Length: 305
Ligand SMILES: *[C@@H]1O[C@H](CO)[C@@H](O)[C@H](O)[C@H]1NC(C)=O
Ligand SMILES: *[C@@H]1O[C@H](CO)[C@@H](O)[C@H](O)[C@H]1NC(C)=O
Image: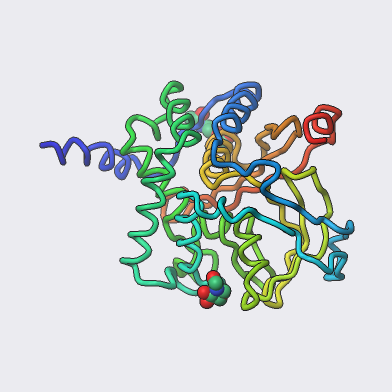
């Protein structure tokens, strides 16, 4: 009986698969919630824990190098020992970088166990709890119960779907949090911790080549190459915890995916979050989610001096 009660919302979710109904929320509510998520992001880096070296401005036209040194000159190693960071680091070798190759790269048992641990932990963090309560209060069908929410977060971020050759070669998580290779370029890769890890592993042959836009130590639009392939510009939030990125991006995806951007702020700096869904076999997946810097305001300067 108990197990039926636990299973029921999952079954409902499966049957109801898989269009997510339209969700009406105002820009002001999104902005307020983004600020709240930032407030409760207790696992984010303190300003003294990360030292950036942006070097020179660059353009997206070619692969010229405006940055001989790394972007991250220092990251406090105690950050990497925080549980959500560690669990994220554990996931990093699970993926085939090249699209068209079926995931996972490791055994399905290993993948399932690591994703399960990551979800268990992250769903219990403050940003994800706040997000759950927010959706629940608004009557969103993904948040009718913690079990249903877990199912949907797993489905949106971790279920495999296809970007190439009809093979299940990708996921929202792989695109946003890991990065992949498609048509001879790098696609996705929108997380600072991933960027830092790649930059510090010689085998990955990763080279930061300058910024096109920067916002102090909180956000950058960056050019880089990764093992021979170019990313003309990819943007990342900096120093945020994995659970914060997941909460903010999930909120924006469920509220403003498609043509509209989700307009939020990080420490007074306006950011626009763009996201796209991919529908396959009548299921909704995260195609991409990434931040773009809004106008550089006095408030942004004042809070990030
Ligand atoms: C949901 O939004 C889409 C895209 O804006 C629209 O085409 C559709 O009619 C909406 N559905 C409902 C039930 O309002
Ligand atoms: C560096 O990257 C390679 C290739 O992905 C990987 O096999 C290796 O485990 C990484 N090294 C460390 C220390 O993470």
